[in-house]
Amino acid sequence: MATERDLRPLTLESDWDPHSPEALADPFAMHARLRAECPVAYSDRWDGFYTLTRYADVVAASRDTETFTATKQTVIPASPRKGLPRLPLQKDPPEHGRYRSGLNFFFKEKRVRSMEARLRETAIDLMKTMLSGRMPAEYGTGFAGPFTLWTICDMVGLDRGEGELLGELSHAYVQAVQSADLSSAGELSRRIDGFAIDIVAGRKAEPRDPETDMVTGLMRIQPEDGAYDDTELAGMIRLMLIGGHVVPRNFLCSAAWHLANDHALQQRLRTEPALMRPLIEELLRCYSPNQALVRRTTREVEIGGRHIPEDCPVALNFLSANRDEEVFTDPDRFDPERSPNRHIAFGMGPHICIGMSVARLQARIALETLVSMTRSFRMTGEPAWARWTEFGVTKLDLTLDAGKPV
Ligand code: HEM
Image (cartoon, rainbow, N blue to C red):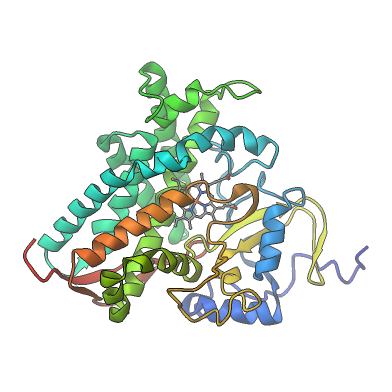
C-alpha cells in the first residue's frame, strides 16, 4: 500500500511540459533527461497527466489493459467524447476483438500486396506533377498528403470525389488541433463524423463490392455477438480515415527530410535497393510519428517507485521509448542497417497498429519513387514540425533535381 506522502496529488510541480520551448526545440534531449532522471514524468498541462518514457514501462502498460484502459481517453488533450466512438481504439479486450477481428480481413497480406501497383502509379503521377512545377516544391501538400489520402480512399473504397472532401476536412482538423484551437477542432470533428455517417448511409442504400468496399464488407460480416450497427460501422470508418492518413503523412515528410539532409544515403538507396527495408524501420524508430497515445488508470498504480492515482491519464511515449539506451545501442545514432530493431512506433499489445503493413508499403513506394525519379534532392528553407502528441515534419520545401526532363 502506498503511503500518504507517496500518493502525490495532481497539483505536483511539473517535471516537463510537452509544449515548452525546450521540449519543442529538442524533444530527444528532453526525453533523454526524463528517462534518466524522471522516467515516469508528471506534467500539469491539460489538468495533469503522467508520461511513461522508458521502453519497458511503455510496453508493459500497453499490454496491461486491465490497469490502463483505452475506454476513457486515448489522446491528451482529450478529444470530445460526444461524437462517434473511435473503434476499435476506444475498446479494451475482450470487446476490442469484436471490431479488430472484423477489420483484420482488410489488412490481410495478400490484400495489402495487391494494392502495390495502383499505389506506385499514384506515386509516380504525383512525383511527375511535383517535378514539372516550380521549385522548391512542398512535399507535404505535393506528395505525402495526397498519396496517403488516396491510399486510405482505395483501402476503404471511397471515390476520389469523396476523398477530396475528406482531405479538406482532415487537413483543417489537424491544423486546428495543432494550433490548440479546440473549438474549431470540435466542430471539424463533428463534420468528419458526419462524413463517416454519410458514407455508411450511402453504402447501406447502395451496397458495393464487399471485397473492395470496407463498409459493405463490414456490413456482410456476422460477428458472434451480432451485426455491427450504423454507429459502430461509422466509428470504425472514422478512425480508419483519420488514423490512416494524418500520421503516415507526417512520417513520409520526416523520411524525406532525413534523406534530403543526407545525400550519401540518398545515393546508396539508388544503388542498394535492399537497404530500403531496414532504413524504413530505422526511420520509424527515430521519427515515430505517433509520439504518444494515452490511457487512463483503472486503479492506483506504482511504476518505478512513483505512484499514479486511479483515473489518471497516462501517456505512452513511443518516441522516447524508441530511443531508450537500455534497449538500443547508441540510440541517437541513425543506423540505416540497425539489426535487430525492436522499435515500437506501431505500438504494442492489443491496439498495435492494424495498418502497419500498409504504412510500410506506402513508405517503400514513396521513397523508391523519390530516389528513382530524382538525381538528387535537397531541403530549401526551414521545415515545419508537428507538436505533441504527434511528431515529425509537416511541411517540407524540396528542390528536386530530376537530371532529365520528365
Ligand atoms: C507510419 C504510419 C503509422 C504509424 C506510425 C501508426 C502508429 C499507430 C500506433 C502507435 C497505434 C497504437 C495506438 C494505441 O496503442 O493507442 C496505431 C493504431 C491504429 N492504427 Fe496506425 N499507424 C500508422 C499507419 C496506419 C495506417 C496506414 C492505418 C490504416 C490504414 C492505421 C490504422 C490504425 C488503427 C485502426 C489503429 C487502432 C488499432 C486498434 O485499436 O486495435 N495506422 N497506429
